[in-house]
Length: 90
Image 1 (cartoon, rainbow, N blue to C red):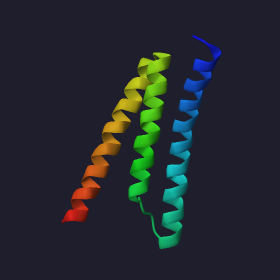
Image 2 (image 1 turned 135 degrees about the vertical axis):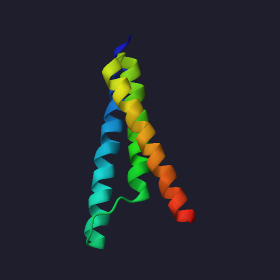
Image 3 (image 1 turned 180 degrees about the vertical axis):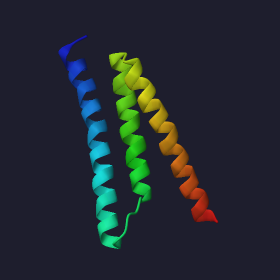
Image 4 (image 1 turned 120 degrees about the vertical axis):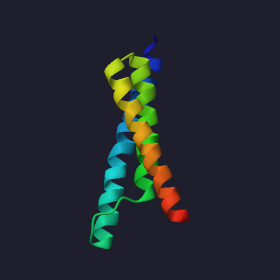
């Protein structure tokens, strides 16, 4: 594998980590603004985006522990997003 390909994959992994950091900043900002703990929809979207990037990175690294962890996390993030959408429709 070339250095350029490796840099690309490391960049994808770092992007995923960045998405996870942003989701926490968004959650914190919304909670501070409202004066109580809140989990906004953006939290779940950033979680899914970060999880997909990290899953792709873990597949490239062929790391079964990382693959399993990210796969399970993605299922939970998507389920929570679906539950949020259902509660908005009700």
